[in-house]
Length: 213
Length: 213
DNA sequence: GTGTAGAGAATGAACGTTCATTCTCACCTG
DNA sequence: CAGGTGAGAATGAACGTTCATTCTCTACAC
Image (cartoon, rainbow over all chains, first blue to last red; front, side, top):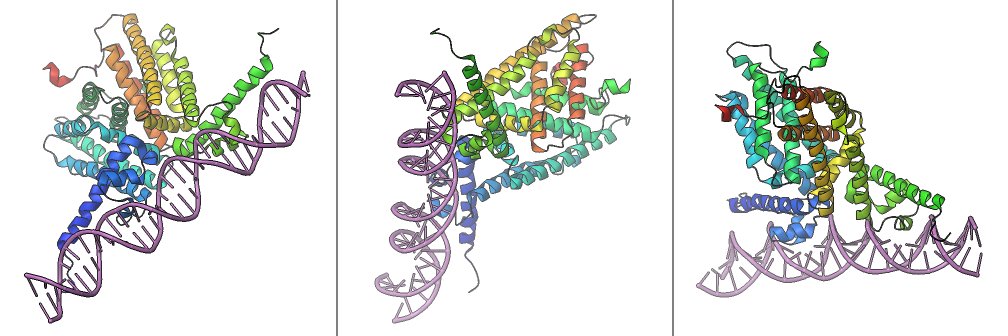
């Protein structure tokens, strides 16, 4: 079979890419994108600096590849959430998983990516797409939840609710990155309480008292 | 008069330091701490690179000086807030001023400082002190507000409320830094609504429904 | 089985560049 | 002239990237 490539080869090439990304993730968390050197990444990955360039064309490409991989993993976890049997429980699970159970290093990497996004257009695009994806999923989830309610109350604006939830999630990320022993639990509970009350029509954070009177 | 220093001299030296810090702020916002060079800062400040070292011992010292200056300015604005006649109005003013009216560059710088704090102990200390200061002020404010209420309802935990408000504020900072045209207004209003309702005893985001039943 | 050829993978020293920092000297001001 | 202020060239270390070379297999020939 002349034109067949060894599957073992292809497989290991993909493995090598993920090994490099894993190594880069560790180095970037430790030293940041700009202070981590290609030598650091190579050492962490157990290979020579030159060899990195067989798998990624540049350091920036590694940064982008890493960002893309991690964000895609999170986005994947949000997909199809509107189809869950118990919507609020699904939302609670997502929040806990990504804001409490995920290792604190993810929060550090997230901060790093945000800082990079403020001046690197490629990173900005990744963050923007991610944010749109999650905002869409969340507002869809909230709309579903309102529609499924016993008596369909007017309730809060789903888009605004999603924005509020994401702002709180971002804030929790920041706090976690800055002080690894920050107790996320109570704040996550507060977030769930606010969103839950808004979906039940008990409390609407979406309309400001001042502008109603 | 041996122990007298020329006021003009001191004045201009101090002015020069602030000019350097202003220049550094502009450069850091544009390129980040690590990609901004001392040449950039010098050019922005209208002086030579070598001359910077007459006023700051190192680049890191400029970074730290800048962080210290900006955070101190914000902290100053929060001081004595418990003494305001209308507490909720004072809080509203602070939130609007720092989260909506402040230039978006401040948010970018803030993100930069947070990312740096995850691995630079000096920056971490600055951020930690700042956070403690604000947390103390805010919880004091909330405690005051609860005490001054018509009928002193049991109400939410002031410390937890302060943490919640700060998390939301951090999240707003992130969103502003990432997309300069982000509409902060509605989210700030939502934050004020939540905090206001909690202080009035109408709604308590501090106790999680699940744990009550 | 042994030997040989070839391809792809990996190495690590070297290169050119960049950048924080230092050095040298000119220029004021009193 | 003395003392301080500043400019700008010089320095040396560090870094991303390259490349000539070596290593490691696999495949085939005999």
